[in-house]
Image (cartoon, rainbow, N blue to C red; front, side, top):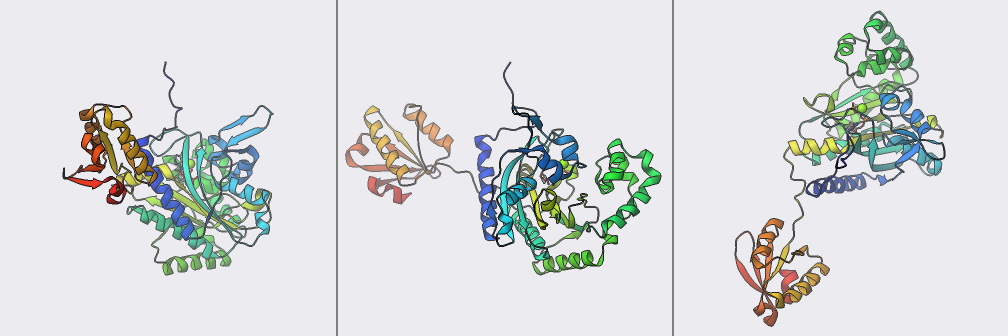
Length: 415
Ligand code: ATP
Ligand code: MG
């Protein structure tokens, strides 16, 4: 039996690769414009990093991690997200001791053992940015602005920015109790996962994907109504910055980032009517994560953006992904005597930076012209006896059929 790709993984085939290249180029460009520098971290890490950095009450750690023991008996995990490894590198390389803030971006594969479906894979890819070392809401606004402008450039008209505040260590405990009081009478009806969340992380119950639990949490108290003065002030400031930046948003108290080290700002870019795979980008502030992973007490804010979901949404929106690269010229030859001349010509053109193609299958002239059509080349040069003698090339415009003669040394410029 033929070997197949693993469940939840996908080949990126040549006919789609240009789409990836396009979003990656645009991503690198916008990150530079906003002053973020790239960081690359290993594919695997010590499992402990994610237990602490993602949190052991989350779905990711409880159900979705690719964890195994290596030959040296270490517990290894393929990275399920990009923030914790970035934080680890920030600490390990003493970047925290340099002038702050530290602004980094990444582009990485992630691994989660999920039930594969549209927009949900086991190997998927994320763009992300982080800003470490500042409490200012200007950092949060800048992070959101980059996401907003990026999705705008990618032509996603159908997405909405939802923002909220999840409070801090001062106001969350009060809210937590109010939420538990509300949920206590419904405890027996909650799903098994949510029963375990009740004590450890009740806010995640609000985020449960089961319809029954969604029904049960209707009318629950909301964190946004419990914010302390400091969190209230920060949330107002964030909105003020977003207004000044001309960014449209919806305040949505149902957004949950229910871990102790997530604080204040939480946001998502959501496809309107997109269902449960409708979130293309999610992020927020995590003022205690760096400390939790073993670093100094330093704040941070960032987001992760799913590349597969982004490409899917761009396809739906009819994006041309900047157009696929096609040959500028196809060099065809008539008869064996002309072949080496064609080989020389194509070498010359390529060395001058022209995208030039030749038939490495050596079909006859008719076959070459048919193939030239298939490659989508803009022009074809036909090399025959006359061309070899005169050093003048017949150039055919593949769209109009028009033919012109061009001197060999002028050919690259003519294109
Ligand atoms: P969801 O609620 O859809 O499971 P999440 O909260 O687990 O998403 P994050 O951890 O915030 O997602 O990851 C950021 C982004 O990565 C998501 O908004 C989404 O675009 C993408 N993403 C997450 N999990 C997957 C996956 N299994 N396959 C493809 N993309 C994913
Ligand atoms: Mg998930």
